Image 1 (spheres, rainbow, N blue to C red):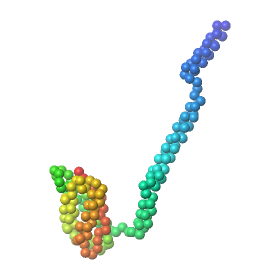
Image 2 (tube, helix red, strand yellow; image 1 turned 180 degrees about the vertical axis):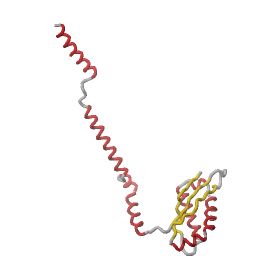
Image 3 (spheres, rainbow, N blue to C red; image 1 turned 30 degrees about the vertical axis):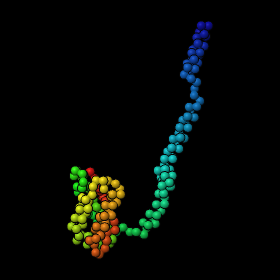
Image 4 (tube, helix red, strand yellow; image 1 turned 60 degrees about the horizontal axis):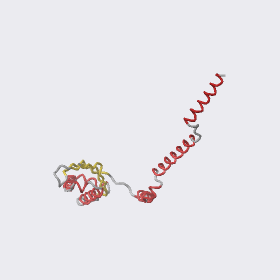
Amino acid sequence: MAEKGKKPDKEQEGQEVQEEQGAPKKGFPLKIIIICILGLCLIGGGLFVWKGGVLSKLSGKEKAKTETKTEGENIEIGAIYELETFIVNLSGGTGNNYLKVKISLELGGEIVKAEVEKRLPQFRDSILTLLSSKTYEDVKTLEGKSQIRAEILTTLNQYLKTGKITKVYFGDFIVQ
């Protein structure tokens, strides 16, 4: 009889241990399912935004993309003439700031290439003078870079007689 009494005691102890640990959680798989669904929703939403869904519609990128496609189909890129890298000290300050720029020119046609090659010393001098007249404040902003690009274009086109330079590109633009 003592043995029979011990068995219920072990069973009772097992039940007490289960009660102390808590009953088996029936909602555990439900929590995992909910977490997985939320994770998938977050990933799906992130991909939707990344691929240009909501944000591009809000910012008008869709409209800009279609305008670029229609304009880009009609415009051909002209010959590209690469100039060497220019390194100049920026004006103002203590003279510790410098600018390193790699410039490429888009030419209006092949005829312009020969004239550009003839006028390289004039181009180089004009670009060096223009860049060294700029301050750190002038070149650190996007507007400043666009203004420099426009000034270079205007200055260089003044020397040309047979054609013109259509665009100026910066390969490197390092300010320190």
